[in-house]
Image 1 (cartoon, one colour):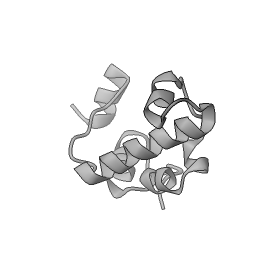
Image 2: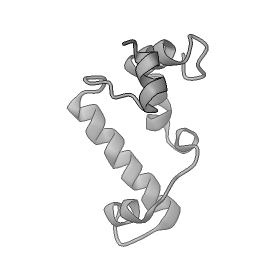
Image 3: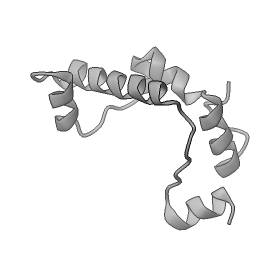
Length: 89
């Protein structure tokens, strides 16, 4: 089954080994900091537990913006959606 067929069937797709452990940790820390800036809280971690959503995080964070054009993300999206994806550099 192709990735696009699996996505159409399941509504989600899990792709392993797109990011390194260090990249994942940096993205998680950035997400926590975004939540903290948006809603406050005792800590970034507490704010992250409270936040339901942050809209357009790629407009708030250069790291998140760069993550969108990560080769692994672009590769998967072009396979599932089409070559015409906005995150394609």
